[in-house]
Image 1 (spheres, rainbow, N blue to C red):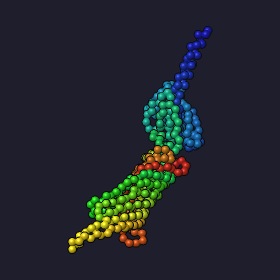
Image 2 (cartoon, one colour):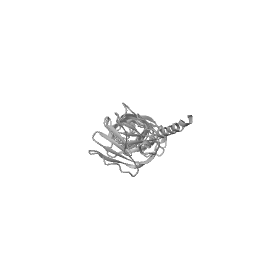
Image 3 (cartoon, rainbow, N blue to C red):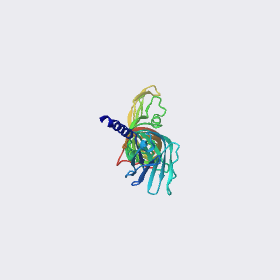
Image 4 (cartoon, rainbow, N blue to C red):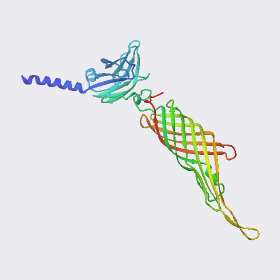
Length: 366
């Protein structure tokens, strides 16, 4: 008697295990909140669910129960009706029944190998639905981590918009100032390049359009000559304000941009000249000592000109980006207080630094 019931019990357990092991799920995304989602598998109703506030709904299905086998190659269709969205899962090559009156049928492109534990993630948020087949469970990404159009194929984090403050180290070089200070002095030493810094802020109004205001302190410029009888030492310090627009090409967390705008500079040139005392021979053959002396020259210039450049940034996290850029800054200014000594030059700035977004979480924009 004991053996008589073991066989059917074991068979029932095996059937239950097979049915459980072959459970699948249809996960519908980007449906209108509160909308009824119905799933049909092999022309058999598999179940219904209601889309939540994020437009997501899950309906468990079972191929074994619906079509008599745990796996199959399937085509997927979506019927959009007035008050209902229906997802139809059909064996590959099968044609589902015509949609109900008032419903529009949309095909999901592709043939999908649905396995024992597959999750069919169907995106119904666009005119042409798409599907992502997951072998296992599926956890939807956070809204801010998705592509703006809601595509499931390549979800990723977009570049942040809004206000971002930045700081960077700058390697700067000036074209003419140090060379011009030396003139035709053969042994003059010039130093027109070095490291400075830049700080400021960028407001990205959208992923592709922004505005910038920043401050740049370039490296100090120097020209020195120590040959007799005239010694001189020129030092030039410059402060630059930049106001510019940015036009970008975004690609997920990466943004490549061009910069176009204006710069305002204030430059100070201080020159110390020392003439050494020297002895010369007069016309009558006697020796004459000429006294030396020292003088200091001071020149200040300021004025507006233009800046152009470009670069790129990578948003490593939502609030933090790394960036690099190259800017060509034209310097054009008149002497403060009048007189001679106007500045006409060009400065190149290579910047590498970080940007930190200020404010709440950035939202993807189209």
